[in-house]
Image (tube, rainbow, N blue to C red; front, side, top):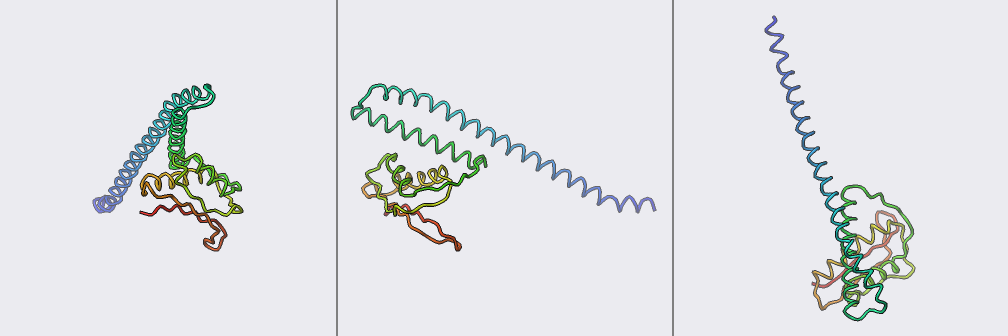
Length: 187
C-alpha cells in the first residue's frame, strides 16, 4: 500500500521538479535579456555623449567665426548630419526599449517635410508633393525619425542622379481619415 502511494506521487514530484527547472531557465534567460538591454542602453548613452561633445565644440567654433566660407559650410552641414544620425540612433534605441511614450500633437505635414528636406544632406534631390492644408495628429518626434530614415535610405540606396519624390496625400485607413506619405526613388 505504501509502495503504491509513493509510486503515484512520483509523477507529481517529477512534474514539480520539471516546472521548477523551466521557471529557473526562464528567469536566467530574462536576466540575460535585461542585462543586455541595460548594456545596450548604457552603450548608446555613452556613445551619444562622447560623440556630441566634440561635435558641439566644432559647431561653436564655426558659429564664432561669423560668415562661413564654402568649406566651413560643408563642415557645418557634416556636423548637423552627424548630430542628426546620433539623435536618430538614440531615438530608435529608446523606441525599441519602450522608453518613449507617444505624444500626439497637430502637425502640418507640408511644413514638417520642408524642414526635413532643408536639414537633409541632399536637399536638392528631394521633391515634395504635399497639400499645404494637410494636417494630422501624431507624435512629431517619432514621425520625424521615421521620415528621416525613409528619406535617408532613398537617398543612399536609390539612383544618385534621380530625385527622391515625397508624396503626402489624404487617405482613409480602417475607416479613419489620415495621411499617407510615400517616399519614392525609381530603382
